[in-house]
Length: 132
Image (cartoon, rainbow, N blue to C red; front, side, top):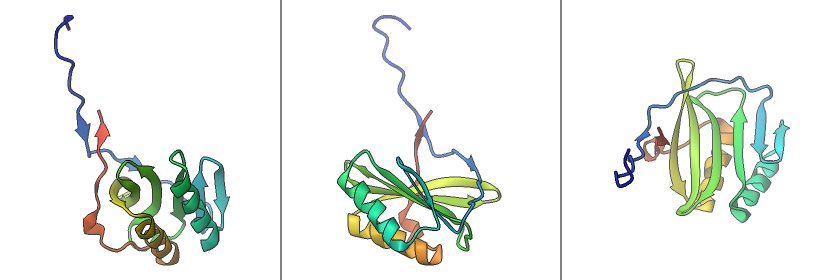
């Protein structure tokens, strides 16, 4: 590449697959502060408040028993609001999908997932793009 050659463009892909990981307890809540096991809904809600108050925070809620193909839900701040990502399991692999939402919608997503392992309106989520 010469001095005046254009920089190569960064490419993205949605074709990224992760392995599956067993969850060691009925619920695991992860953040920068570590993990908590067998958490209450109030602990999840408190963790979300931390995410809403601090752009460096993230929160991951993982369930041991999945009935709807979703192993975990995670959230963090982004320029447009709150990005919520779902770890979708199928055939011993996990793919990430995401959507941008408001704080209240994020709370509703986590609450439904915590209570039932389900998430509504899956068609609103798009595959996460990764730089390659």
